[in-house]
Image (cartoon, rainbow, N blue to C red; front, side, top):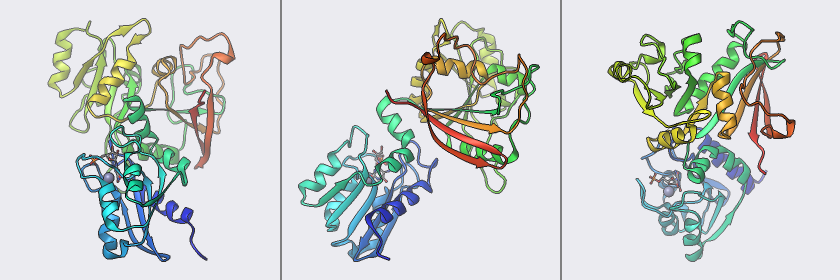
Length: 367
Ligand code: AOF
Ligand code: ZN
């Protein structure tokens, strides 16, 4: 059967997605070149600093690019970054038609790539499988628009919405399959964040453990306004992964020095009535190159992110278990709203069965 534009764009999206988590801070981009129904070139952006997707596709196609159609998941760039502009390459390649899934929100590009191609007389269509392309690069789009890391709030709970028993016991709510999925996600993320309460209660190492390959460890970020992190905590072992402790400037200098000697970085932010200033923290973390953060709790930290309106995506693993208990812990503490309408309105995105558990994804509803 004849392949359609959508089929080729779908292939370009799959190529792009195969490098998800490896391209930060850059987006994931895929490109496919088709001439007379034959795929003559394919490419994807593998890593920041390396060639863009189009470059690989044109290298593969060579002379066959003349008169071909280019399917690309993101508008070809028009600027000199770490690599030269792809729009020039496209222009000189002799392709007759370009199909773009979505515009590049990078202010250095933002439509200029498309204008450049149109001005050169190339037919350009924009918007094919746009939703899919935008979802694939939700992190990059948020970075460009908000100048902040993309924040994913992740938690595991029972069917009755509990994350721990009344005495704090929480191992293991979800299955091994669900935990493996979390490790795959950690591999893709730049940062992973918990509160000092979680460090004190569970002494997690917050590293990526994958069964058959090396996982990349995200930078561990600990919210600790009074610097209570013990010097022998697993997160202080910086030989395995980097650690940033976020605190206020009112803390004991000797404690700061002891942690710094262990290789921990200390980030001080101002304090608000609600605790550490999370906006300021996100700004600082973005500044040092952290483009996305997995917030793994506990309830107080989750509550602070919720209250500050800083959650960009919610990921819940739900176990088919009921534990009940008047004082069992729930995922978000400290919001104290009076009316249901004042809660954060989300929209479900997907539900996936992971082993015996469910993985539910939702996004804050757009007003
Ligand atoms: C594309 N194709 O494959 C990618 C694009 O520093 P540079 O030169 O790598 O430029 C990075 C910017 O280029 C990035 O922020 C985004 O705007 C665009 N990424 N563009 O046409 C690609 N990765
Ligand atoms: Zn480019």
